Length: 249
Image (cartoon, rainbow, N blue to C red; front, side, top):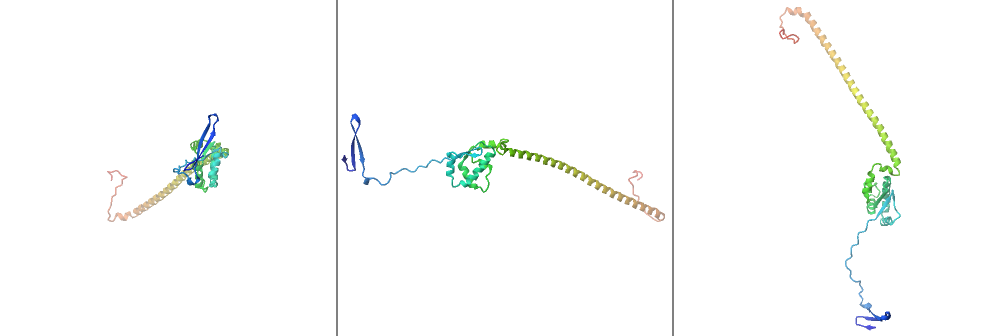
């Protein structure tokens, strides 16, 4: 053991088999000379962005028995009362259209649930935007007859058939009523025209009979008073009649 001014230097010999001993030096610094503060560090580094939590919905049911869903539920435990109704709406949509797999982004679903707070139901487009495979979901939903592949497809198909048949019956009745109404309007217009023409003919016949009666009355008066008129001075005004030829007129 040797002493120095800055501290004590401890020398120890450790046997190392046949080759001899090895000497190890350990510096024992006094506690009074140690710095009470930790050594200086550089500026704190920004942690990596946290990865979004994703979970799956298979055949209209959320897969709960995995770590992804448990992490999502723990992370949004404060908003869970808002997320559950929105998640149920998404499950119902996937089940209704028989979507086999939907990958849901937890952050988008949580934002949608908190923004609505189930005061109003979110639209189908807003629910689909929470899924990462929305392209495949939309292509399946737009395929003909996809909505009838769900658990309620039989009832929906029956309702569609009944509604289409009733629409056909109502359309047929409407066209028949429209044709009947058009024919009735034509008959009514023709009947009104007949009545008007009959009224006009009656008025013309009455006016002509009155005119002929007045003419005959004036002619009778002229014949009666003609002997006295012929002996008196008079002025004869000749009014040519277009019933005679031009040479006679």
